[in-house]
Image (cartoon, rainbow, N blue to C red; front, side, top):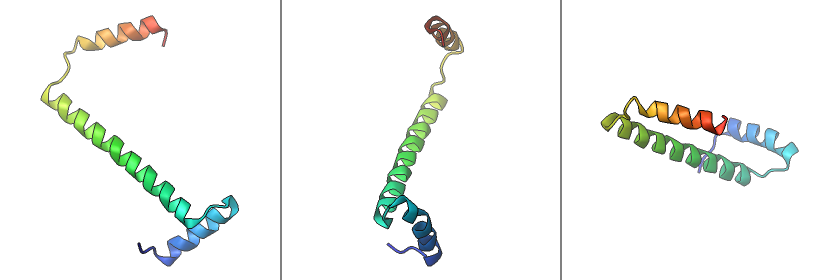
Length: 72
């Protein structure tokens, strides 16, 4: 993996006071990126399903009643 010098200097400057190594920062960044991708994929799938079969307008009333009952 290749990282430009400017980015490496920034990583080193920020990570040093935290006691983190570059590899830990890269692992954390990759995990966060993968998590975001998983969420985006789920949202894309959900939106596509809603477009194929939108919920009936009356269903919102069911959710509102449940929310009111639960006190939220």
